Figure 1 (cartoon, rainbow, N blue to C red):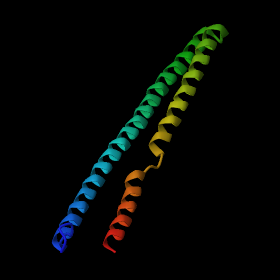
Figure 2: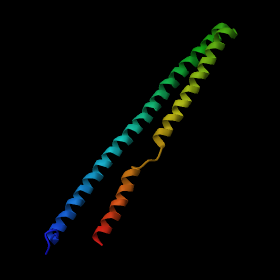
Figure 3: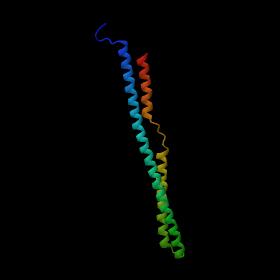
Figure 4: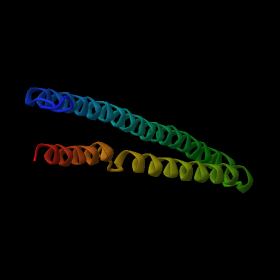
Length: 129
């Protein structure tokens, strides 16, 4: 037996060590991707909260506009300005709501982890064949 040859127990220990390293790497990747997903969902939730705040402000402006319109007896200059601002505020709420929903509903299920798991299974099969 040559000095560079390794015994079967050494090969088994090496394979176990490699498998342990592989599992540790996969766990680290899964943790990193989970953190990224939580960050993305947090951004979407913040956008939805922003949309809710803007919508409440829009409703207050709409009600204020209606009150001014009634009090002024349909005097166009005052309430027309409030009406335009109200419409713009509600459009802003719609944009924020759409943006927040698109962030929350985007389907991403740890794609890098799944790809590397498949590669690792193939690598282990090749190594044990």
